[in-house]
Length: 483
Ligand code: SAH
Ligand code: SF4
Ligand code: F3S
Image 1 (tube, rainbow, N blue to C red):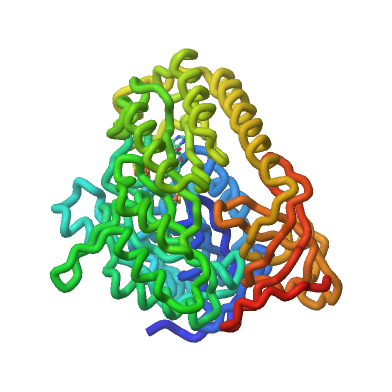
Image 2 (cartoon, rainbow, N blue to C red):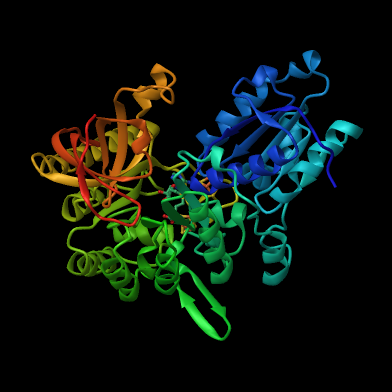
């Protein structure tokens, strides 16, 4: 049992969608005990950082934030400071050494313990470290068990919008790409039972969620046997598709080798599935892919793209690339640019290689591409990708697109309160192919589908105006909307 509490909680989250989901769940558990959220760290008596270790920069950010809190307990002796997530699992005791004022270090597999550990930190001024086994510390079953699945009741207010929710379907990763810490920080790959996932989606739909994004580091590696039947991602998607109230279904991140035809056909045949796939290539050079231990060649990736394009001709594909990986020559870099030009990704997330202690690449290969060269290649790749994104977005000018309205745009939120606003404000939504669209409209449209006529664009955004609105409750009548 944990103690009821009326304290103020500050939480900062960095990293991927998995971390956003974890923060939502931790905050949900703490709010049930009476905590309320604050965005001012100075007035918080519980300060949590949900951390990421994928690149050094992400860790740096958190250690700097911790550094700024060094003397904060002098003013608030009751304050509890906790480090959660991937860096907690990776650095363990080292966090206490680098930041002695930290009270808790809780890994990704122990988040259910957070409320209890905060209480004991406050009541007994006890420090605690709760982490899972290292991957070599035990057999597969023992290590897997030490990474508990953490999926308690959900906290709608922590979501980017109340209509969109993440649902974890695969925990951990077994691919061991040589540059990557995730298999260490998130543990062995484990697929959650379809029954639990479907139930969670049903609960979310009952709460008003319209868009569900299924999460896994290699989401399309999903496999679970339930009642003697093997469920792959295509089977799971088919099940979730039946849940009433859900209008759109996505899944990230896909691993190229596991992109099977049954999944592509499910996306083609099930109308709620977003016509969008994130399938990181990482490099366009076979030598680099081999060193990265990605398990495919450029030819394999190309073959997969061919299958995607023929099954899903209107789908948008996005990718991740690492520039400046160990031994990357100018020629290898040019091959990555060629792959981007050939595949015409909707967008690519581009990262400069960051050597990570504990990974194979760190052990085996020198980080031999100078920082200046990494920066240059990063900018060059960004320019190539941006041009493609701009050209592709321009094709939409003059046409109508259907968007799921998310809510007021970031600009609008910066300007202040939009909830009490009566007139139109700038809204954002996304098309089924994941393109961001901004337009003016009533904030109450959030969570509905709207038709937008596209008038203009940037490389990242389509800009337009509302044409009609589809009524959600049973009928499909199209009404003109006055804004
Ligand atoms: N599971 C996903 C991605 C997880 S990490 C996948 O396999 O695609 C998100 C992205 O961070 C990766 O796709 C990769 O491009 C990048 N990344 C991972 N480790 C990195 C490192 N050490 N340095 C730079 N970028 C890295
Ligand atoms: Fe990291 Fe590779 Fe797993 Fe993605 S697939 S999380 S890049 S090890
Ligand atoms: Fe970072 Fe952990 Fe996600 S290392 S990218 S927060 S899985």
